[in-house]
Image 1 (cartoon, rainbow, N blue to C red):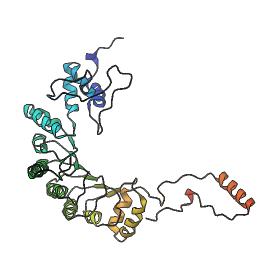
Image 2 (cartoon, rainbow, N blue to C red):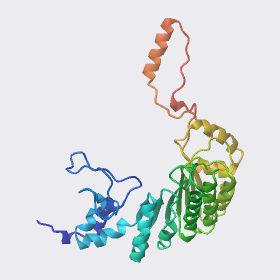
Image 3 (cartoon, rainbow, N blue to C red):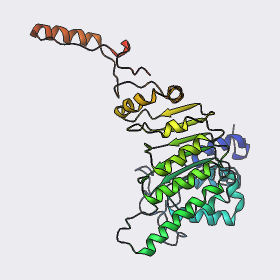
Image 4 (cartoon, one colour):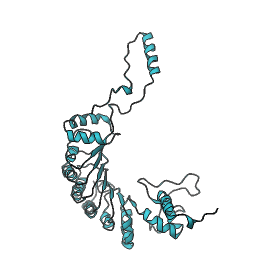
Length: 338
């Protein structure tokens, strides 16, 4: 029995193309070593109109070129999740959306990996964005220690334009925050100030993921207060602070908050210091217990073979050395009581 392309249901094609076309959070997978055109060099030339190599076009958009049916099905999938890694990417996307306004309605998720000034031009044409992933940096890709005043002023203006884009996002439900700079620096502090104002307008915000150890700064007080007042906030994810600070305590005052998920991969030395203080606040402790898995006193626990344990006893006893063997992990020793 022969099956042609037109006989395949479009729902099935959409599911298949979704795995091929939708970009992931990381860089595109490089071509295998056996491919006749290994992936080398920049994808496009300086004028970005002429490819510099036969494999210059990203492989994930190739299905859009197969036929009109695939183009119609895969185009919304291609624009569903947008990753902006450079200022040039952001500027080019803004130009594309101006020429094709209908594409902006398909964008549901934006990840921007720097403070790019053209963010506002992009999000003003994307009314359906619900997931926003941003990286807070210092506003520049190089050191401005020896730069002139004009370059510093241009960097400041770019950060302000970047922050203006927050207010144009209206339907954010999920927020992810990363950083590559100290929050005490002027530009990151300004970004958090603008972000705090925007959160007060995001009435549908349900989850926040702070992908770093959040240390208290003057701007963090407004940020925590904004999250504490978010009417639909349910989940807060964060790394365990190295030392006690009141940021999570202030956020826990939100009556709609259901759980706080602490990063289990963080070093547990700081967890003991933090949890020692967190036990004093029942509401905060309850949210952490609900959202975080059981943390053990040791970063990694391994099962102990009892036969090896008995053998160790016999060996040491023959040598006349007194030793004490710890209990196995199943005995419950070493488990934090909270």
